[in-house]
Amino acid sequence: IGGRKGWSKGAWLELETAPAGDPAQLHSRFCNVTRFFWTEGARVLEGVLFISTLPSGVRSTPCCPSPCSRTHMPCSSSWRAAQRQDTLWLWQDEATRMARLRYFAELLAVMCAVSACIVAYNTFRFESHQLTQEVLEPPAFAHTERELAAVLRAAVALKTISFDDRWCNATTFVQLHQLLATTYPLVHRHLELEIVGNLSMLFRWKGKGQLSEEVSKRKAMLLMGHLDVVPVPDDTREHWSCDPFEPDDGVDHKFVWGRGTMDDKGQVISILEAIESLLHEGWAPQMDVYLALGHDEEVMGMDGARSVGRLLRERGVWFEFVLDEGGGILSGGMLPTTSPVALIAVAEKGIMTVKLRLEHEGGHSSMPTPHSTIGIMAAAVERLEHSPFPSRFSISPTKHTLLHLQTDLFAHLRPLVANLWLFEGLVSYLMGFKPATNAAVRTTTAITMFNAGIKSNVLANSAEVTVNHRVMAGDTIESVLEHDIAAINDDRIKVEVVEGVEASPISDPHTAAFREVERSVKQTFEGVLTAPGLMIAATDTKHYLELSHNVYRFQPILLEPSDLPRFHGIDERISTHNLIKMAHFYYRLIKNAQSLNSPQGSA
Image (cartoon, rainbow, N blue to C red; front, side, top):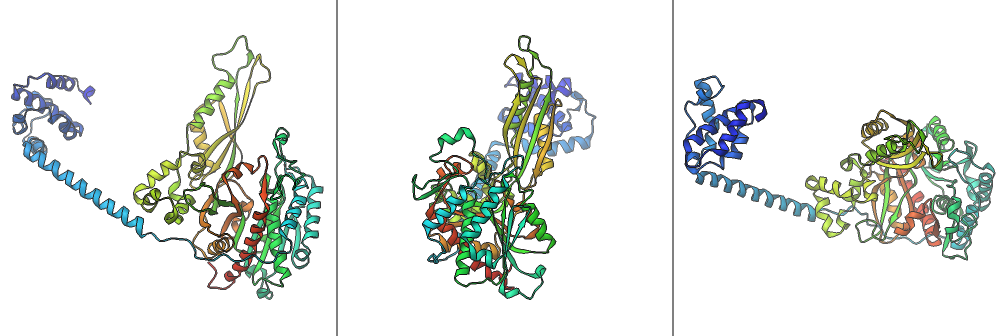
């Protein structure tokens, strides 16, 4: 501000150098400075900052009655009156100033005490969201635990691999179809089966209570899985405990090893085992039960799940709920609770692939340019990585997770979660410190491929970088692209979207359908908590979002921290105990879901 009028800077210097023993001179110069800040709209604030430097005698002296001759301001009695009234509060005696400070200190103490009472009240009044449900004994399944493990090993041996170019070996998928038909004869005898998109399987189990109704008016549920698996890189095979496609129970008879055991052939076989066992009992559902098994989920499901979803939309089918693979039962301290937690994902992050391309001067490495192609691109990547997206904790399912588990969280976290009205910003900030929790509250950026250069003594004249985003609800593909362009801030680099799927809507975790999923978990697994959550990876549910308001993603498998790297990684495996537990869960879920067939049960 002092730079706007030359005299003001000098006035400040005069104020600083005025003799302390001459209050009148100091006061006069202070008034000049005060009038300047009056014209700038900040006089009172600056007066507060400098008033403490004045001698006590000056503080109680009224403002100059007529200082206008020493300023560039027009002389006006109305201006002087306004100025005197507006600055009078600055010239109070020491006792009055201290009284006001005590008042504000007491007010602050009262506010802190009230806030502490509210925090304590909210912390201890919060009631548990957990259902009270006893664990039920498993039924007599069509196969024993050991037989079920043998079926899974046979399925894993069939290399139903999906490659990035969407090519697959159709023969192995047909062989898997035949294996399932042989293993589960009642399923194939009593359920309608359609092959969709050449290799995906769509089963329909007609509800006996709705045989006379139109298909479009039926109530139904949809269970999902997929038959394909990701490849096993050749350079990782030597690190496996056994051949990933020739599992041997000699490694450890308590587990089934191999690609696809966890993702997702174990789930497929468990669902079929549950239906086969229900049919063996002579049980039939009141509502339609659909089972969709895609063949290309690992490459976005563009031929399989998308074709199935389109077919069901054309037929007017509407589901009370959809359940696909997703969050598991996390134990071992993966969440801040003393008990394992079944995370039932009510939303899924979008996925987006971006390419960064740069064409720049190349040449011989003996005469390098000041800024090489690789250097320019590397700098752009660094800027991109240092430009995180804003937190969406306030609207994310992760907030529902914490609220649902509040009474079961570690004691030091309960006050924070119970009082998000006060601590939401702090909780959101803390979530950003670990990759797993950070991914649950914001759109993430991952640099997955960097291609440049052809020879050690040749300057690259082009570079290409692949960036993978997982898009959080609250962001869109368009907004993420704008963010990337702004963060890179280099017109030489071309940014384009290769493919993208928006984040899914968030399903309501307070519906009857969600409660039945929770109930089935409680009936199957002892001592397990349940909570809504967020699926940070991609599933086939994106092709079924128009078929239900209640789209969930949950895999009923107990996971330890050491199990997470096994997904798409080395030594993928599932315990035989987990396998039979999964079948038990689906058995209970299919039965429990029939309550949704009544008008009161639907939500």
